[in-house]
Length: 412
Image (cartoon, rainbow, N blue to C red; front, side, top):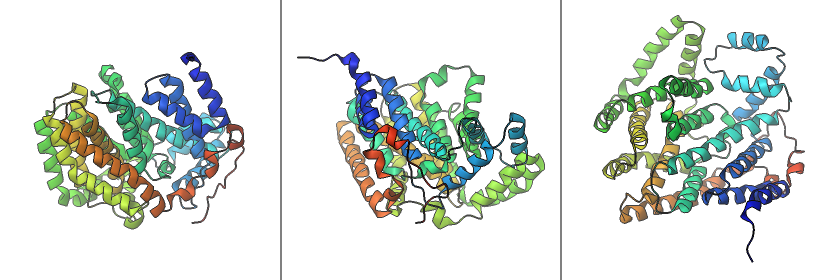
C-alpha cells in the first residue's frame, strides 16, 4: 500500500512542532532527495534559529555584547534616532544594527539576536551548498549534499554564529557568487548586492575587489597574481601602517576603518583570535590550506563545468593568495573563516564530481569522511558542546520558546 507524497510537507510541519530537531533532520533528508525543498529549507532555517535562541553563550562571547547592543538600539524610537546613533558610532558597517532596530520594534527579547544570527548563518551555508552542487555534475547528489554539510559543520565551532557580523558577511558573499541567477542580473544590481556583505562587516571589501578581478581575468593570470600576493606577504605590515595614516583624512568612516585595522592587525590577542576553538581543528584547516593549491590544480585539469564555476575557481586562487598575504597580521583569523568554507566546497567537488577520475574521487571521499568524523573530536576536545542547550534535541517547539537565557552569558 502506497502513501500520498503530497502529504509530506504537512507531516514535516507536524513533526517540527512535536520535535524541531527530528523535523529538521527529516527536512534535510527531503532536501537531499530534492523534494519539497522550499518548505524543508524554511524548517531547517527555523531550527537553526531555535539553536541560536536557546544557545548558552560564554560570558566573553561576542554575542553577549550584541545582546547589550540590541537592547540599546531597540530603545531608539524613530529612524532619525537610529541615523543619529550611527552617525556617532564610527562604524563603517551598520546593516546588523539596522536589523536590530527593526526587530526591536516588535520585541526587546535579547534571545532574538541569537535566533537571527544563527538562522542567517546556517541558512546561508545550506543555500551555498545547494548553489554549489548545482554548478557541477555529481556522481550522487544525496551523498554529496550530506558530506558537504557535515564537513562544514565539522569545521565550524558551535558558537561561530555568535560573532553575528563576520560569519554572516562571509556566508552572504559566498551565497551570491555561487548563485547562478546572480550572474544574470544587470551589472549595477550585482554591484549593489555585493555591497550588502560589506555593510555586515567591513573586512569583506577586499573580497569584493578579488571577485571583480576574478571576473575579468583568465585562470593563468589568477594563478600568477595569487602567487605574487603570497610572495608579497612581507610587505603587508608597512602597507597597512601607511593606510592607517591616510584613512583618517577621509572622514568618520575612514577613522572607523583605521581603528579596525589597528585593532585587528596590530593590537589583537593572537591566542584568542586564532585558537578560539579547537586547536586540532585549526591544524586541520591549515592542512586544507596547504593542499588547496593541489586541489585547485586538479580542478583546473578537469573539464570545466560552466563560466560561473570557473569564476569561482579564479576567486579561490586569489583568495588563497590574499590569505597568505595577510598571514603576518591578525586578519589571518578572519581569512581562515571564509577559506575553510571554500575548502569544504572544493573537497566535495573532488569527491563527487563526475569529471574527476574515480581514483581522485575515492581519495577525497576519504579526506571528507576523516574531516566529518574529526568534528566529534573537536567538539569534545575544546568542550564546545557546553554552549549547546541540550533541550534543543528533545523539547517540542512551544517549550523551546519558553526557555530563557542570561543576557550576560555564562562563566566558563
